[in-house]
Amino acid sequence: MARRKLVYEGKAKILYEGPEPGTFVQYFKDDATAFNAEKKDVIEGKGVLNNRLSEFFMTGLAQIGIPTHFIKRLNMREQLIRQCEIIPLEVIVRNRAAGSIAKRLGMEEGTVLPRPIVEFSYKDDSLGDPLVPEEYIIAFGWASQQDLDDIIAMALRVNDFMSGLMCGVGITLVDFKIEIGRVWDGDYQRLIVADEISPDSCRLWDQKTGEKLDKDVFRRDLGDLADAYTEVARRLGVLPANVSNASKPTLVN
Ligand code: UDP
Image (cartoon, rainbow, N blue to C red; front, side):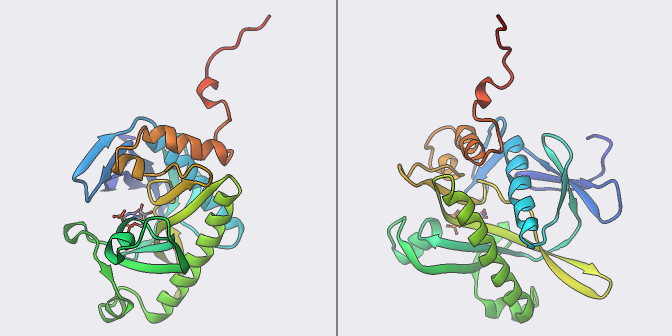
């Protein structure tokens, strides 16, 4: 790792220069932050789980024709990704009311929305990532109307894919955030899903018990975050079912 040139360090990940032009190495840290980094901790193993889970989701998206920045996983904490120009928006898709929308509109958490809602926040920590209307995005040139139409269509496809995947393992996808990047093929621009998709950026509730299996466990002090993420990974088959015993020797008679 020390050999690699640091490009950018964020709250949960680090970007290093990749081995070839047009690539980066994305390193997943164990750091957890919430409330604009007012609450911080180190959760052992979180980075390893998010690296695996983001690989799993991005690979699945590519299989259904949604382009992503993911190229390949390199090791426990690192993946090779395609370099792209990140559009400075958090693209949020909601199926049920929770978090900021529940607060803003005085809705009870868990209320099913009339249809999936896509909204945008301007990515700026110093401003607390404010919610922005499409009008701002176009007027300030962060994305064009065509880009926005494509981003909304892509976000809804990601929602269908992720909802189906989660539903299959008894989990409700309440909401999630994605980030979108631009890549250039000659003069032709394409939009791709970038950053990460993991329980850090989704709300995941157990269908039967309502138990939270996402970063709200950390935000709201509901238990062990790594246990919750491990449960998601185990259900999806990303980790062996008996992961706690996976590395222990077994007695051979
Ligand atoms: N989200 C995220 N990063 C952010 C803000 C939100 O990944 O900086 C995710 C969050 O985990 C949730 C969804 O986007 O799954 C909607 O978040 P919300 O707007 O309700 O904000 P929050 O309650 O997290 O402040």
